[in-house]
Picture (cartoon, rainbow, N blue to C red):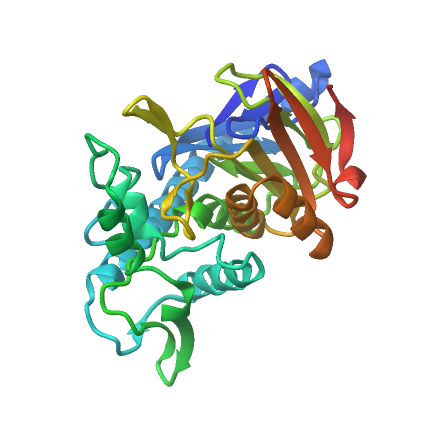
Amino acid sequence: MKAFLGAGLLFAATLALTGCDNSPTASAQNSVLSGKTMGTVWRVTVAGVPAARLPQLQEAISRQLSHDDQELSTWKADSALSRFNQYQGTAPWPVSEGMADIVTMALRIGKKTDGAMDITVGPLVNLWGFGPVAAPEHTPDPQAIDSAKALTGLQHLKVIQTSQGQALQKDLPGLYVDLSTMGEGYATDHLARLMESEGVTNYLVSVGGALLSRGQSAGGRPWRVAIQQPTDQEDVAQAVVDLQEHGISTSGDYRNYYELDGKRISHIIDPATGRPIEHKLASATVIATTAMEADGWDTGLMVLGTEKAKALAIKQHLAVFLIIREGNKFVTWSSPLFKSFLVSQDH
């Protein structure tokens, strides 16, 4: 889920997201900062910030994102999360308040999706070649899948409060937690807090495909985001929404994949089967109060597939937009709550 800035549009690729304001005056006043983090792209668009402040703002953003990456990365052996994964005991493991928050949210969403969103699916992610381990040369055999599945399960992980502070505890020593499904939203929310602490009140921030807005873009217009059609082409909008100071995230099966034994292998793993998803749901977009919450729900809905995702969106009163493959075309579905954010839609 990567973010790209076009003329008047901010596209975040597994969605396609866009912050819209095309007036000449607005273009002169919006400022864009960007860079790379967590294997993806971050972007901060601000309105009304003097140019002289931008270098200092860029430096503060880089520091914040480096801190988040050092906390959540499974690619860095010395990250806080990697150290917990390497720990083979079952005693409480002290973590930061931020780490406790993201795991708590993940466990809550995991329960509501009947385990479809599972942050302990790391062994399966690695088995299929989407983690720090290289992609396999052949499709993993059933025994390898079953062995990896035996090391997973949300019931083996909990967040507890100790006399020293927050801690994670696992009752399965080999449990491996992968927070990449929510890391972009987590970092996006932190960028929003950073903007507020810096006195910036009009901004659109994103890490990968997770975005969050506050205030208005230059010219006094709302921040708007375009949801991308799920193809390999960039900047093809399927719908446009007014974020109304919310977070938004999209999960899709069409950007992060590879070919193996003649089949397309999606990076989204179904914890129930231990295999990549193969259904017709191409992307799920969620709007929520925070980017982290949206980032958690979109993955769970993608795992569930079209009909279960629709039912859960209605049951949980979620703002959800689904794009489904039907033959060589796409059809869309919006939950009742999502329609309140919808500005326009292409059919």
